[in-house]
Image (cartoon, rainbow, N blue to C red; front, side):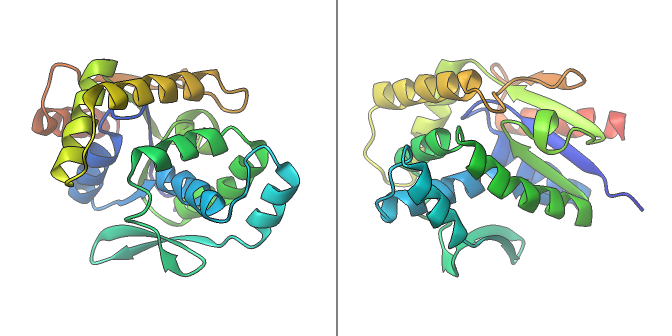
Length: 222
């Protein structure tokens, strides 16, 4: 029996991860955060001192990169070569590294098969930038989750403060605008809604309302 796949795309800070995670839990699906995969490869490359423009070195890096998603007590963890990267990848620097490295076709190809394999084997909600357009073009449900950039930056700013990080709102906002531009203007798989996706805007609603709206949208189409 074909698995049910739900693709959720949208810009940084739209709440994709939080909303998709809760919706997956409610539906009994697994949640797949593809951004975590790109962040992990980006952080690993930075740690190894590999310049993203040096494609030869990057190719050699990928040959010795083993990225795995694991579910421990219902929580998604991401591992690189056996090391838990889950904590390392939730910083603004990791976010920009992900945006930069995700422009590179060989990196996208490297992670594409992993993402598709997970979807073939599981009922899942997968979120990212190009899930409905490239990774899972045959997903039964496609949703494009968005919100005003200032609202998204404020959410991310509060999230970082709660983690005890010292951040400036203007810096977070500029980082987000830069990420939006990079994601929507890259040559390979730019961020955009799939032709058959449902647009869900969470600018003026809170988290619980956003989750309820997402679940309603999914259930109507299932």
